[in-house]
Image (cartoon, rainbow, N blue to C red; front, top):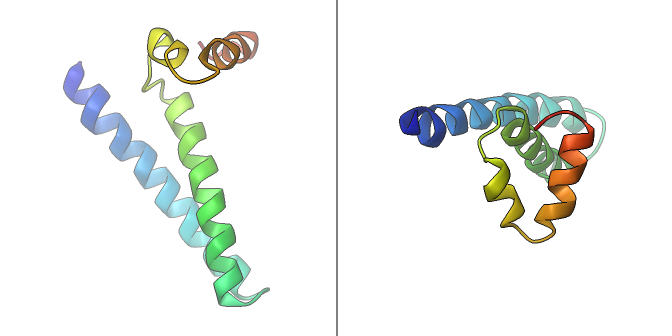
Length: 83
């Protein structure tokens, strides 16, 4: 269980983020200048990684509550029936 939580799931989230950001960069670099495309792809990568961490339930409910604004985040996730 701990190997899956600390190694496998973060690797899956990283892989999802990498694939999405790479293709986002490819699409954006043909539309806008490459430097701006890189910045936008990085911002999108951070968002996708956060969503992947939530979707894969890498953090427990107690760990989320320990974060800043954790109670609010936890209540939102419960309303969305994610946790």
